[in-house]
Each structure stands twice: as C-alpha cells, then as structure tokens.
Image 1 (tube, rainbow, N blue to C red):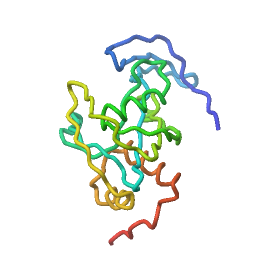
Image 2 (cartoon, one colour):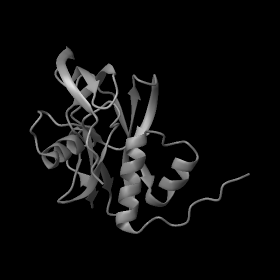
Image 3 (cartoon, rainbow, N blue to C red):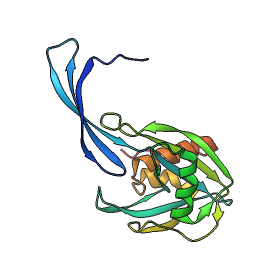
Image 4 (spheres, helix red, strand yellow):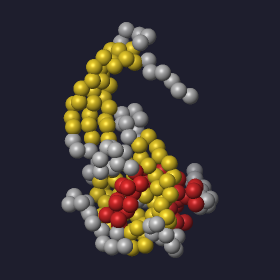
Length: 192
C-alpha cells in the first residue's frame, strides 16, 4: 500500500560527495504538525551480490576484511555498479570474474532488496550463477585482499545459524538462492 509523505522538503544540500556515495541533508517541515527537521540520506550506487554454484553443488564464497567491523567476513562475491546508470547484470559478471576468477553462462536474476531504507536510497540486486568454472585469476582492486572458500551448498544454512556467515546482504542473497533452488532442507532446531 502506498503512503503519501507527510513531509515537505524546504531545502536540500549535498554535505559530502565521493565517487561512490553522497550524503544529502534535507530540511523539511511536517504537513500536519508545527515541526521542522533536517533528515540525512546516503545516496549509494546500487549493489550486486552473486551466489556462484559449481557444477558439483558448492558455493564459491569470498573472505575479506571489512572496515566497518574491523574483521574478516565470509560472504559471496559482489560490489557496486561502476557508474550510476550501469545495468546490474554487467556488474555481476565483472565482480564475479574480478573477485573469484570464476564465470558462468547461466546467470539468473533473483530480485532485490532496499539495503537500509531509513537512511539509504540504493538497492542490492541478487543473482544466482549456475555451473561456475574457473576462467582465470582473480583481478582484485588495489585495496582488496580476498581469499576464496568453497562451501558445500548443504552447509550454508548451518553456517548461517552458527554465525559463521554474518554479512546480512550475503545471507539474504544465499537465502534467495536456496529458495530458488528448492534447497532449504530443514532448519536446525533452536536450543532452549
């Protein structure tokens, strides 16, 4: 159901700008109450996440250091669009090859989610790449340090439940892929 905003934007300014994001301040007034407030919104390029599945039913995952948490995370290949208008499918093949050296001729779009609609404008698009095989070496950006880990498909849910996979967008991508493949199995029982 669509809901009309009860806020009117009085003015907008760009507080910070970089090649991959902008911070926008919007000074607003409420249409029904005597209230003015400045909201902040991050504008990011859309992101893509790819769940690469080998012919033998394993997921090609990547482990890399994430500055937000200051720790290495196990996740799936992905990244931002190179430019604001780039098509997500173009970014998928590029990111898959760059981060893993794997490629696929069978890439399926699974859908998208709003990353954090409270403060961000962008979407994360989920893709499933079936029958991935090695096509070359990793071609990492100068700031990337990525190791590849191969995970059996039937271990994905237990690894999520055990906290071995914690990146929220990677988990969402993996769950979309498992549902598309009909591979949900049975969820582990919660211990009480």
